[in-house]
Length: 171
Image (cartoon, rainbow, N blue to C red; front, side, top):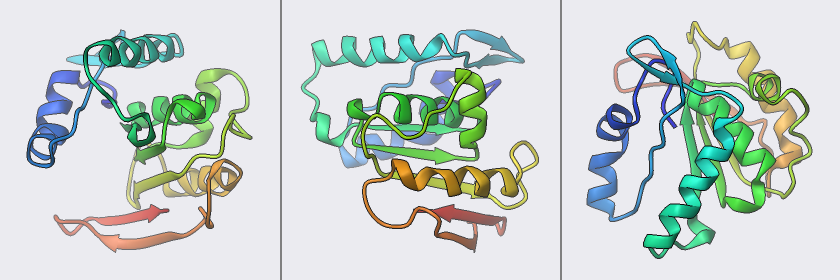
């Protein structure tokens, strides 16, 4: 799920197209319904739009539901948290980049924890992220172990990204 101000076409081309083609997996990239800059962002009503897109997609393609992952970046990460935890039985995992669980709960207007089903959550976050501070990401990470399948979701490792940027990720 794309970030605020982006489009589904750009997000797919920039993030997913090459990998999906080379690794031979299917990707759907719905678009947020709220205009934001040159693109769009998400609102709480978009959760139903995304679930309907998944259902429609699966009428046309054979999808292994045990391998269905919801992924999102920034505002799309907030929506991925919301979908992944509120509809955990629909997904095999949740992948978040640069978002926080607390913002997802604010978008929903209520608590997402405990999740409806135990689900693995992977969260990658830039240490120097100006939109979602590392402190807010860590606070959300510390709440998420109740939603994870196994292990300790509080593991957060600092690393350097491909451009020398400082990254943090939790598994």
